[in-house]
Length: 158
Image (cartoon, rainbow, N blue to C red; front, top):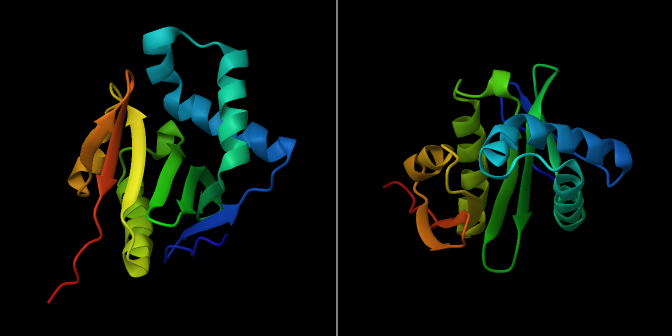
């Protein structure tokens, strides 16, 4: 799968399914999500790696690069009836600068162009939910620990 770049300075590089890419994406997860995971369960390295390895095997992962700096990862996976958005991990030094919103809007526009809604999930106590709500996502379900959200296809502006 190809994820088009976001001009003027953000590129998305498909990660190969190898151990080096797995390690990089796990470090991005640990940096971005570690504090929220530790808050609830503590950090079990073996469990977190097992869960991450499963997701890494199931989904396309992209390295997010801005001006030659690696800033995180994202997964965007078109399915028959929706686009699955996830594994969106920005390293802490790149959070809260508008990059997450810009990347999310880019991915939403791509889904809109395909006429597909976007679905995601996130930990209930992770403040990223405010970003998703600002961009039109609504809760469509829940598990014990995740909110399940969907954003409908945006109607074209007239």
